Length: 195
Image (cartoon, one colour):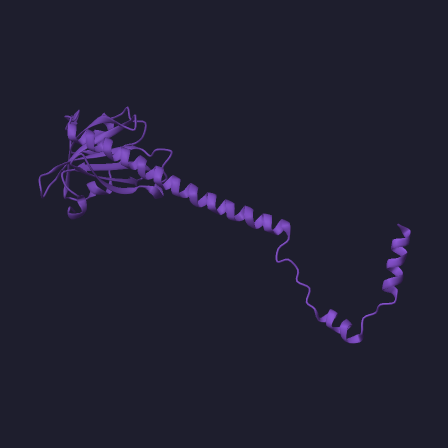
């Protein structure tokens, strides 16, 4: 094997580049790879994490909409039953005191601040298997009766996600968050035209 190495050394010892060949060789731009393996791996990991975040957000949004749809269906169902209030009163404080078993404080929603609405009474109900308040309201101008629901905000929903309108079982239902509670109102028509 040494003979081969020695022969090779002897052969290349006599070969030399000309000055022009040497200059050309120096001018050749050595192209380095754009990314090292670790950089490529980090970029791939970042892209994968971004894709997972997008997919998770989409799934979360779809599950929130499904949950809101289920809540709206339950609200429409309860509204359609037209259960008699357990207390008849137009005073939210009196209603709140009567519904003392609630594990949250009943609040007067912005809707009641308008003189267009009148509180008729209230009763207990359940939304998502949890205790809730069902308030019967009358729209003064139209005379139509609506049902307002107040419940704990489900853990799976954030305050930012809640604002939706549905038509369920012949009732128009609007769901929103107010003062940290889940609110829902059901009635015979869309509330957009009602003040």
